[in-house]
Image (cartoon, rainbow, N blue to C red; front, top):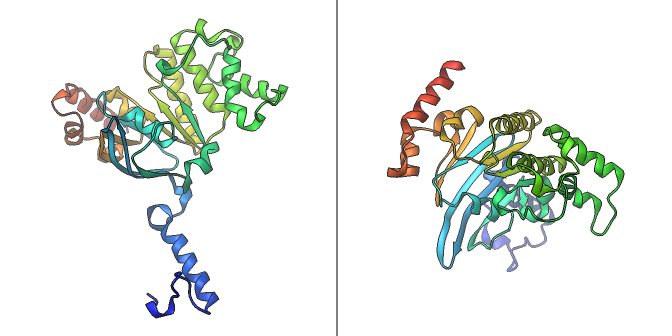
Length: 293
């Protein structure tokens, strides 16, 4: 450490410009997420994040780093703050404290690298647009406000609908789609953004088996391309099958890490307490997964 006498009152180094540059570089390295590691290795860094509604905390002091290139399951009981966490990451709800960085930068600077799939219940399905319009909305950052949607944009949106298996429904009004088709439409909207980090709020909720399989296949495809996907998920039995990293949340982060190390009966008991009735089934699912590896 340099002696204090070298510093002027404004914190700069007097008449030593090369040392000024050295110290500023050291400060930049120190302020990188995870102690100076490559920012691209940490997709999402959250520090001391707290959200409160009417002075009642919903999430409290959430601190974690999520590794890039992972399939991440976020699990916890109802009311644990899972959806609020995703919204706080994207500045959709006010926060009482905390810092959020996406690939080493504040969310506002890297929002173009984030794709979001909301809960179906939060969408106004009576809005007069068709499936293709909804997917094209994912391209607005490229199209620009009040600029015309060009053929190349519609072709990209159609390709995203094809990838989720509903290209034939492109011109159907969204209220006329089934629940699974609506979910696929919003997955296509996220896909067309070609983001690096995807945040998905219960994409498996109230979908049929074929849609669930299509979603799982899509998550694995994204992961194979180096994308990071964080999914709020409720079916504990499928966590070991679908994800390689897990966050256990109940207002605070109970545990997070690789599924094999973190998704344990002890951590589940801490997360769910007396409300957990599936521990035996989850343990059996984990044993089946281990035998299949």
